Length: 263
Image (cartoon, rainbow, N blue to C red; front, side):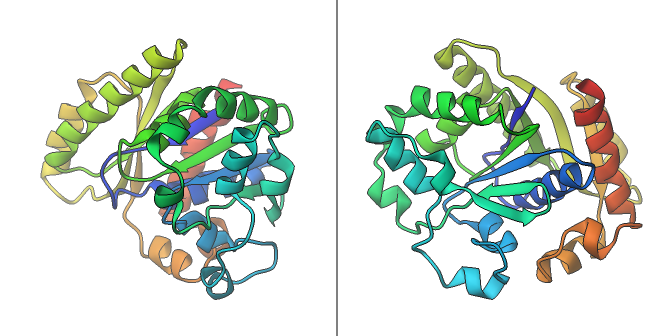
């Protein structure tokens, strides 16, 4: 497992914030990491700055920086240009393919994306020779773009919240991963469930734990923490803003158990 997509068809469950902490946390431990912003909203790119040395505000006003859309266009033209799409060192040992084309869904129709699935997967597979991990952020939908990302992956991590609607959402996500696996002809596993904003003081949490344990997928939890929102507002990772916080400890546990121990 080297290429991992963080995906859920529901929004607001912590996909981007989890990518930020996992990617930067792995890089902090000496791993070479490529983060791929596969969400047209571009929040991952905004957080890190679309180019080295930029602030959040500076990045927000730019749309001409090469990134994900240029990579797909180069693949479509038969001349894949991964190098030109990567922003180097957004953090030490952490590179980024940004998403800065706000009109992407207009410019790239589904049939174009569908034709790029196999060559895109091959490009990422070659990129994996230069990185220990490739982590992909996706948007909250099940469009052709999201399927392209999942089918290029070895595994999927599904972030969730402890709530009733998450059960049906998880079932839909698992079915989507299975469908992608069948379509591309190779095994793509749902590697783990990541519950963000966990609150042990809520009585229903224990009930939800029992319900989700029936899926027989490894479960990790990140406690609800003011450090998370505070760090994101400042465009700083949890390791930079609250390295001793419970949330940082939770993400560190995920990195150790879900990534480093399986190598």
